[in-house]
Length: 619
Image (tube, rainbow, N blue to C red; front, side, top):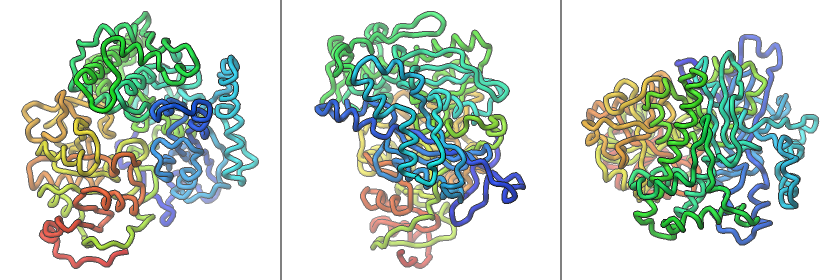
């Protein structure tokens, strides 16, 4: 993977084909559309189990619908359906996301040559025939042919194409291996469940993947953590990161024995999770009610309302056991293969604490985590299957900015103070240094769950109370939730202990904060002394890097708080109008969209102090 600039700016209004090798225009490009999600999966579960709690209803496959476009072997666009529907983790057929990808690339639906989906349940058909409910779920949701029906319903122009199913873990693995920058590596996929497997290990070498091991649902660390998430009062397939945050404030020893019984380590890097086999009737199998009853019997009642110390302690024990299982798996395959660099995908790969500890352990020499490690990433993996993977790796974009440009939309008319400036980075740094909290919307949309500087909320990291303000008044979320830092690449090791060979661009790995620097950046230091860091390189993100540089000039600190530009319950803002809605509905002080600065009344004096420009007319 090149260390040069990230994905080029491409929009419908300024199309520069990023796949052009000099002969595009003389021949049609090869256009492959990949997508993820299972349309109807949640609806099926609700229809057959109408009395489920909202969290229980989320225990289904096929969330995180997304689309991705690979043109002549190059990834040129990817976007999640939720960014258009407004429904977090939306599982509906991603028609809007497909159109967005084509728009970004300057192509039409009739240019598509192949369509691939990130599941292949044809492999599991025989196992879906055991009972009537499973048979109906297979026929109404999982049957591969159904994807072709959905494609033709939404895009009749493609009536001559069939959707090709792709093995779920293979799609995940490609998204880890291809952009990793490793010529040889272990590729580890750990999630809730694919068609048949919950854990897969591959060798990546010579541009090819070879599967080394696969473990079924009885070894699902993703389901284990989802059960813990439900028991602690949160939504599975959504709020696992809250449990990870809780773990930093708990005593893992209190439930250590319980967790050893829940997750049993075995030979050859394997593990078994008896906790998942405590559900025997159809309803319990859908909700893991038996697993949760067992946790209560061990001394931790389910969380209902206020979180107590016992819940923090259970979270700490569960987090530690997940880490032990991951070390056990990776340690075995490192020893067996001699491969000491590891690329991760699957939802569990987003457990930045576990991956951070592995990266710093000395067990491995390098770690890469696919930033879109959840099921949305399988849209990319499905589209990559069949490409020249070495060539795809050479041209894979460094950045995750794969969606539409913020300038494809306009901020609505409003009564806030508005001014257009020539140097928004300087203005933003000035306002941040004065303690204001800023929405920052620039360029193309990020793909995946993290806002990495194009749809972000930025704030001063020097005061702990800033974290509390952002959580409470801006994001409307729990006070224990950590906020992540962004840092200039030139001074990253001044503040953080970053393991060698670890890709820190995508806010996927938690690393220790240097104790002597912790007080300087108190708002981004979590209770366990770590931070989920994003390192910003000037060549890849020049505007964000300049904000950091200007902030450092004023304060001596080359770090900022960065969190996603949204409020609780909403996806990250996609467009300029959505960014403005977040600004309008929250206690954000200032919003910067491109070169235009919008300010609330109380922030106007600070904005005026930073610029003497005349306010621009509103749109």
